[in-house]
Length: 316
Image (cartoon, rainbow, N blue to C red):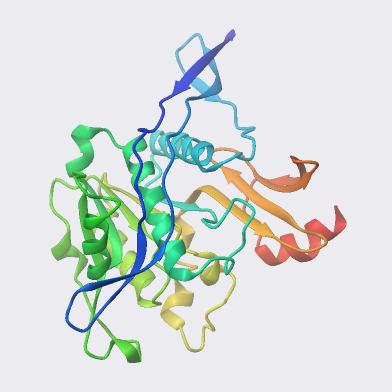
């Protein structure tokens, strides 16, 4: 079968800027209290991806994607990864990367600022991935109702996307209790795509995501993307199964059905490196040497963070 090389242009993001967005908290009177300055969003440049096209019209994309040089390139890579996963009929997808810098690790940034930075990047990502005619059929879930209000006043001001929330604070919120939101009552028949934004601050949020998947996505044509959910906490046993049995059970239910389409996790220290994956490529362990990333190891399935930190990186 003859194969011909071609170049496919990846559309650029809009060149709009979002200025001086801040993290927030909900005061007792219901108003939003703004706390910290984060920054602005810069336009993305147009990128090219190599693609081989066969005589029968089918295409196979080059899976050797380089580590991104900045967030604009990262979003372009993530967009293509999601599009390829959608073509492969992947229904539940994960996108995970650090927001305090491409070389940062969890904890480098303040939690509220990291969430706000994710919000900015989600807006850019949605503008890039979702066509205007499908915007009203796309629903973006934030962890709480107060964050929906903040999103409408900032990053998502003027957007056509439907904004919604997973949980609703209750009078006993300080004790870890939130009002349950029935997912089947939140979605509408015309909804086609759900994107869940950073559901990790409260342990109940990922349980609601599972409910959303089971009640509104499974056995339908809808798609669900989890954006910066810090799901590694669940994978690694950060939450003890004895105290969080429902959360631990997600490893065998929700997470087993999920495709991680774009992923970056950094390891610091003497034997530091990066675990990187861009769908449909393999999982790669990288190390930065003289401003370049070299591949130390690669495999088809996701290795555990413990395996990368204790076995792969030290032996490279």
